[in-house]
Length: 231
Image 1 (cartoon, one colour):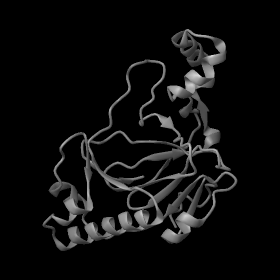
Image 2: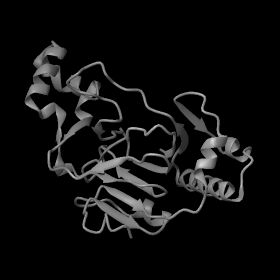
Image 3: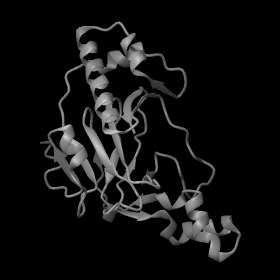
């Protein structure tokens, strides 16, 4: 087990895909990690795939067309197996070759892009699964180490000015524009980096969820593409 998680009650570490999808979130635990050490050349996969846009979705068929070395082939086998496991579970996984996400710079007092600390929301019972095979990895942070941005007085005042409508509709305005999904880290916060090769399951805000949703963010890319499985 990675000792980063041994004293962190936000993270549960499991040893198999079956445990990953079947263990229920409870208490402060809203992130589960299938901890793995992968043997494969994932950088070769990136070098052979063609980046068509800032985010390019690679299908299993795209992967099978690649001419790869033995280690590259091993990496491909791992990715295809992960895609199949999640598909058989009923999820809709996507393999993304990612240069960068679009930034939200419309307002200087609040951001709603994925580089901001945020939670995911769904109208149905679901979870977010992700695995970074190569490149910078995402971070999560305990819920007690963040403040919802709409509760920060100066941010809330500016949002009220932006709303410029009936007070009774303000909360709906915040939700409709996803402002309520974003958070600011406290000064003593200790984020956890998700690392490479592990499959993570993160709790989502939905009506059936019995734990707080997992606060997370995308990393700022370091000049190289990421290879990311997400659903």
